Image (cartoon, rainbow, N blue to C red; front, top):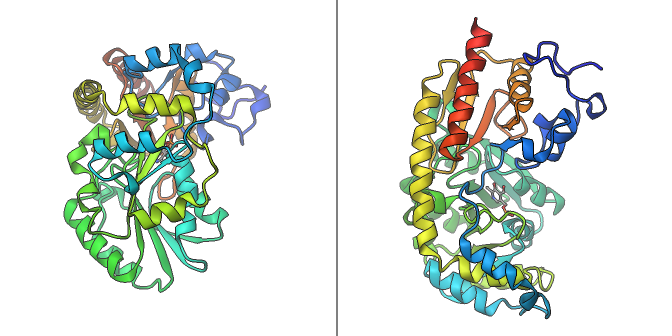
Amino acid sequence: MKSLINTLPLGTELNEKEGVQNHPMLAPHGGNLTPATLATGLTRQDFLDFSVNINPLGPPDCVQDICSRSIDFLGEYPDPDYGELKKVVADAVGVSTDWIAMGNGSTELIYLLPHLIAPGKEAVIVSPCFSEYERAFRQADISVRHFTLDPSDNFNLPVDQFLFQLRQYPDLGGIVIGSPNNPTGNLLAEDAFRTLSVYCEKRGIFLIVDETFIDFASPQRSFIKHIATARHLILIRSMTKFYSLPGLRLGFAIMNPESVRKLEAHQPPWSVNGLAKAIGMALVMDKKYCEQTRYFIQREKNFLYENLQKISAIEVFPSDANFILFRLLAENEDKAKHFFEAFLFQGIVLRNCANFVGLDHSFFRLAVRSRKDNRLFLSKAGKYFHSISG
Ligand SMILES: Cc1ncc(COP(=O)(O)O)c(C=O)c1O
C-alpha cells in the first residue's frame, strides 16, 4: 500500500482504496467525517472535528425537550406558509413577517436566489466564499465572476477597486459577499457596505450578504438596519451553525416582501418540517444561550488566536466568527498534505481551503472548540512544527 505522501511522521498510511481524488483533505465542505474514517480506519468517535464551524456548546437544552415530544410535531403536515415560525423569527430580528423567507437550511434559499435574477444576467462572488453560491448560480445558467480578496490586506474589501471592476460588467444581476465571511472570518466594514449598497440600488443589482455567522460576532453588526431602505439587499441567515443543529436544516432570508413572494413561488411546499418549526420557534427565544455562546466563543477564539500567533511557521488571520483561518508559510502542496495527514492520523480533522476560489493548499480553517480541545490542537501543532524544523 502506497501513501499519498512518503514522509508521514506517524508511520501510518492512508487506505489505498481511497485514492487521491477522495483524499479527505479535498472534501468539498467541513464536517464530513466519512472520508476521514475511510482513509484512516479510525471511527467517527476517534476524531475531534476542527473542520466543521458549528457552536461547540452543542444545541440549547430546549432542543432535547422538544425532541422527546417529536412525535407531536410529525403527525401532521406543517403549515406551508410557516406563519407562526416567521412571526417569531421576524420579531427576533426586528422586521415584519412578510420580509422573511424560511428554508430547509439557508442552502435551500441560496439555491432559490437565481429566480430573482433576470435571465442573461451574471453574478459576482466576492471570494473566497461559501462554494454553494457558485453552484447554485451555475446550475441556473447564471454566469459567475469572482472578485478575489487579498490575504495581505486581511481579506478586506477594497471597495473603490471593486466598484471599478463592477463597472466593467453591464449585465450584472447579483453580488454575493459574506459577513462574517466563511472562511476568512471577517466582517464587511459599515462604510464599504454603504458605498456598495448605494451602487447596487442605483443599478438594480441584488446585494446578497451571507450573515450565517453574524450571531457569533454581534447582531448589531448585521446590515439588517438597512433592509427597509435598500430594496435590493438580501440577508442570508442560518440556524444550523449558531445553534449547533446542522442535521435539522433550518435557515431564513430577509429581503423586501416582493422578493420574498418571487422566491417562495419556486419553493417546494413543506420544506421546513414540523419538528424544525417547533425547534426553530424555541431557539430564537433562548437569549441566554446566545449570550453564553458569544462569551464562550470570544474567550476561546482569543485564546486560540493568541497562541496560534506564537507559531512562526504560520500566518494567522483575525476573525469575527467562530473559526480562524491560517496559512502555512514556506508551503507546497506536499507539505500541506503532510501537515493535514499528521493531524488526521492523530484523530484531528482540519478544513483545508484549497477548494475555495482565491485560496490554495496552504490555507486551513480551524473551528473554535472547547479549551481542552483547543489546547490539544495547540500542543500537537507545537510538536509538529518543532519536529519538521528540527
Ligand atoms: C457561509 C455559509 N452560508 C450558508 C451555509 C449553509 O448553511 P445551512 O444550509 O446549514 O443553513 C454555510 C454552511 O456551511 C456557510 O458556511
